[in-house]
Length: 158
Image (cartoon, rainbow, N blue to C red; front, side, top):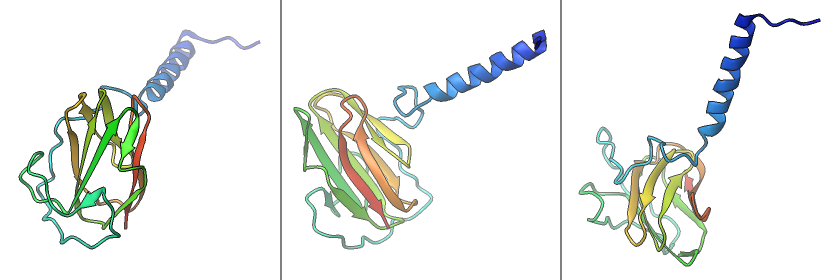
């Protein structure tokens, strides 16, 4: 027969509470410290020169003056209306080291999230929300909304 001591019960409760906290700390939490409006730009690294990518309507090398005064290498703009993503979901390629700004305008309140970089921004209905970051990790990263669960595009960093 197995008898648990009070110390063993406390340890089991502590492990269970820790596991529950980890499960609740998923990417859908509103208290995620990476969610900000607007995001701040790292100032320690100078922007690299823009590397040409395949023509795409979602990415331009012309910076927008609305989110910050720092010149960006890739400006990616997406609009969501009636659960439709414009331009349609696809891949956007950037070079490692580029400064990227993603601006999204949605017709309903939502939250923007860049997987892999753990960045996000609140998207009030009808108001653009932006994240700006240095693309310092290579790979394929989904950019999505949380409430409507729309994949906006896949960011390819090479």
